[in-house]
Length: 231
Image 1 (tube, rainbow, N blue to C red):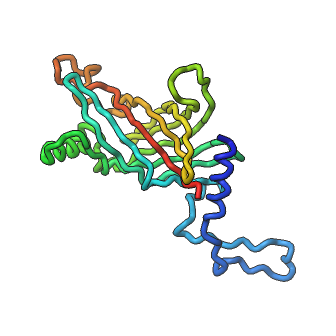
Image 2: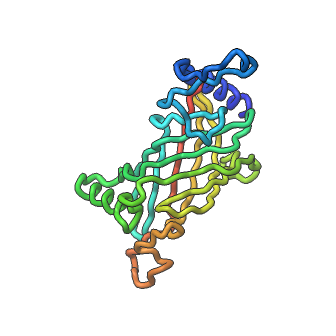
Image 3: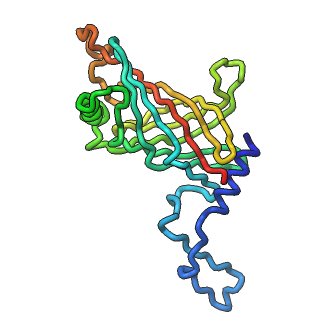
């Protein structure tokens, strides 16, 4: 994986737009030992807290899928990634951030357009993700480590990250594996999230005890495939 990440880092760095010469600082003859520092075109500038070794995620090709379960069945759908990047130290993942557009949450398993839209709107309401007040969710990577192949999970790496939903932040762990094709390097994994930690308690059996078969389970599952571009 180290070689692959090194390759993608080099390509990402060489793909950045050239710095604009129009914004170069004037340097006097007496300051000739000081290098001019050109400004970066704002349209392509990463947030200031990002390091130079930043690799942007291909948000068009990346996929985020969710599954929510209840006693009588389950529903599934998609969620759009608005923006994402990772930061590297040589070939080691040291950080990153992913921003999710919660207004894009969509059901895909209900065939009836009317009933599918009804569920979409309910998920966006204050019963669930309250997207009017909290239109974005954020995942911020804190740590990354290899995990033993003997764990039989099928995953070889584990990320520790802060997940913020509805303005509430909790640390989660995301197991994943790396796959490489001719043009992309992909991280594939899954994670179960306890919605009640983010004050989403609608029909939770943990908080309401007379729901019978109307209980919606606390955990929902996110399956993700995140792509970066090699060439």
